[in-house]
Length: 282
Image (cartoon, rainbow, N blue to C red; front, side, top):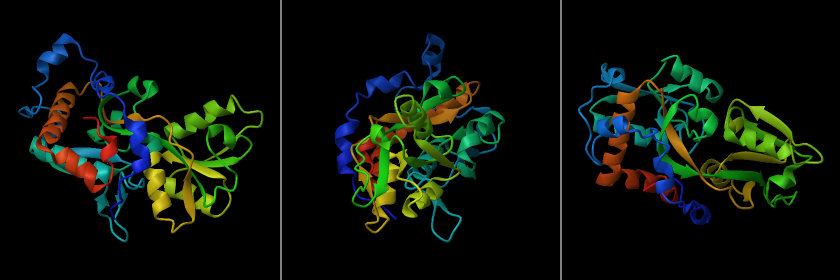
């Protein structure tokens, strides 16, 4: 199922693309010399790809970024389509490995797969553990019941209320940071999967759900008028493809493949297919 353009998100995603360049690899002279020119995919020498497959760790329950087609085990979504395009550029197959988000970085470090593509926001804490290749801008949205009965417009309006959120996400940290400012703390109720958090909201057991804005907007669009987005999305942050710090050749290959699909127009088409053109980092 596709979604339409998220027009209200567009105004908040006008972030200069140059601000993202420094996030991808750290950028010393030695790295720059090893990185192919824009649009030029290198001959793949990364040992992780010697088996002919790019293995991708992902928590496949975060529509429209990654999710299973209803009634099947077929993974679909923005990350799935982008990973397929990158793998095709690299001349390898792609395999998605469903992994709980809370432990996905440790699973990458344990070499259970090659990269992470799981709507993972780039943060300083995560950059201390792994490297990132940025590929999309996203922000946080607040999902509430239709009519916004608690008149929620921002994080400050959640003080004293129960908020449901997926464990391990940047939204948990945002709520914890807000609690430092609240007179009455937010009751943060965490769940392994975002759909479980949304169900709590539908049942009236939570006043709101915090999630990445594209995901919150998608959940609202599927709720048949039961849910809506409250207020404006938080300032955008980039999603990144997570790669082990020692996987320097793979990092260079994935970065070049991503640039190649940007140059060819495949990147734009995939974002358009999911109504997420406003998140382009080009």
